[in-house]
Amino acid sequence: MKIQSFLKSSPVFHSHMVYDQFFIPFQGELQKQGLSFSQAMILLSIYFEKSEVYPTQLSETLLLTSSNVSHCLTYLVKKNWLVRLSDKKDARKTILKLTSSGINKTTRLIKYFDQVQNDCEKKLSEKKILEWNKTCLALSGLL
Image 1 (cartoon, helix red, strand yellow):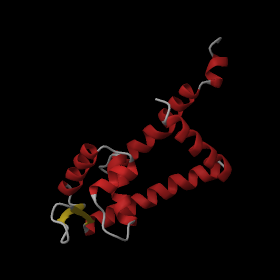
Image 2: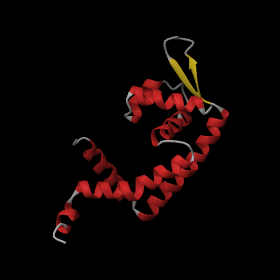
Image 3: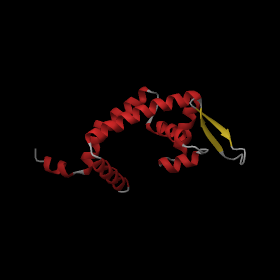
Image 4: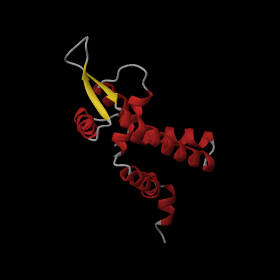
């Protein structure tokens, strides 16, 4: 078809193709575990942090709105994977801690994310992965 030459050079088409063929199945697997991508990233962020974690840090680090983080936290608390605690130094702040079931959930998530990472590394060299990441960052600032 005549459009093929355009499609070969279209970052929009290729981005959509990656979304359809990679991210949708990835999201589907997370949904089987009862999580959205943002919720999973919040659990992982708290798990790997050695110091106290605050909602504002999650917003800044994960590039989520504060209302999105709040919505995710409410869900994670409801599932008993996370608790909100008052900061003893500043009662206006909320500290986030994983519960034991939250730690168990997160360790399963880590295994899944590691599996996906390993699959990517088998198909792509480290150099190509770094190039892909740079390209995605460049594209994210376009719209």
